[in-house]
Image 1 (cartoon, helix red, strand yellow):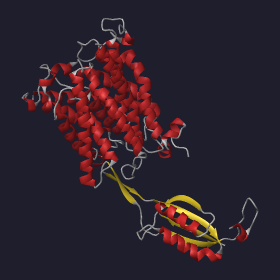
Image 2 (cartoon, helix red, strand yellow; image 1 turned 30 degrees about the vertical axis):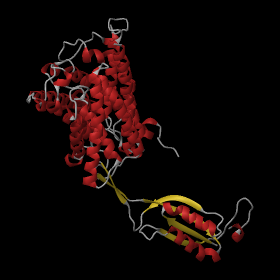
Image 3 (cartoon, helix red, strand yellow; image 1 turned 90 degrees about the vertical axis):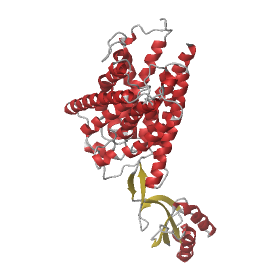
Amino acid sequence: MEGNTAWVLVSAALVLFMTPGLALFYGGMDRSRNVLNMLLMNFWCLLIIPVLWVAFGYSLAQAPFENSLIGGFDNAFLKDMTITGEDGGFGLLVVAFLGMLAVITPALISGAVADRMKFSAWAIFAPVWMLLVFVPVFKWVYGGWLYERGSLDFAGGTAIHVNAGIAALACVYVLGKRKGWPKEGQPPHNMPMVMLGTGILWLGWFGFNAGSALAANGTAIQAFMNTFLAAAAAGLAWAVVERIRDGHFTNLGAASGIVAGLVAITPGAGFVAGMSPIWIGLIAGVICCYAVGLKSKIGYDDALDVVGVHFVGGLVGSLLIGFFSDPDFFGTDVMAGIFYGGGAKLLVEQAIANGATIVYSFAVTFALMLILKATIGVRVDEEVEVGGLDQALHAETAYNN
Amino acid sequence: MKLITAVVKPFRLDEVKDALKSAGVAGITVTEVQGFGRQAGHTEVYRGTEYQVDFVPKARIELVVDDDDVANLVSVITEAAKTGKIGDGKIWVTSVDSLLRIRTGEQGPDAV
């Protein structure tokens, strides 16, 4: 028990660190005149989400466990969550751990809306989206109707990455394209910052995936190993595809592949073993590398490829559980994948779970953005967009020399 | 008096500076600049998308010299900056009407 507590405490802190890591990953890819706006969109989630999470979020997302659509207010305002109970406070620790996931999920969306969203609109969007979209989907996947049907999502491939990724797509459709996109080039302003953010994300992801075992046990060890291998394999795949297709090994290719691999292994981290994480990483790395090119073909301005990396990576990883899930390692209450004699039943459930998430998340996010657009407005003036969001919205500039 | 202005590849700057020092030049002014010439820009690729970078970074060196030294110093710079590849830069010489050393008040060739 003490071991479990120690590991989940450390994991929760590691997951918290992912949001600043994500901020640097996105911030480096953004332009120098908007980097502070990007950082603050992420840090805003660190300010507002924890407060809302303990007030209503956790209770609506989890308690009571029997509810299949949405929780209630049993644990609202941390009611009954104390260190004096029978569990010695482990329940309170789980509230904190899941709260870290609640922080980073809306933060993922910020990369898509970069360079043009009003900060006031984001300040409202992020917490409202967390309550209206993240919380119900989280409930469905962890204890709700999708869980009951047998679909698997170990650490949040469906509930977090597919959810936030498809929401990002809804956001950019309401928000519109950046001025000049795709004709004018907008390359990353600070690649070392992107690489540092990638390293922090990878580190934090060990807490995210292995911590989702909510115990210091064999499943945590396997999830740790899977996180290690899938990220490496996907980074390798993306970098090699770029070398063959575009002629160079690139930092951004390596970083993007690592993140795509981390996303893809998230849903299956505790359900696959052996060489499976390498296959999942390689497949996700190649598919995501091509998926980021879709935006210019289809014409949606997903600035920093949230859809191509998080939506596609999460979806690929989640569906691949339908092939690679291996109950020999993780207990018989988990369905086996196609490669382990389980037939297509699990794959069908994975498709249903992701399909339901995609429809709900896209529809509610789209409606929320339309309401914000009609009331306070979602987009900055053209003058602000051209002159830079940092100076106009935050009275700060990143680089003074 | 003449003003020699040389735009050279940044990685040749140290060689040009050393060569000018060896030739007895007492001071130069260096600025980081960007522009394009026949070398044009280059292409960068991020996540498979190509970005055209039109301006190339260069170093601009300026020095005021006596008329008699111009020919020699231009050839010193040329020799130190030359790689033989496209983008080596340019050197031009303009006349200078007056020159003043602020500290001492010396004027004209004495201030060089």
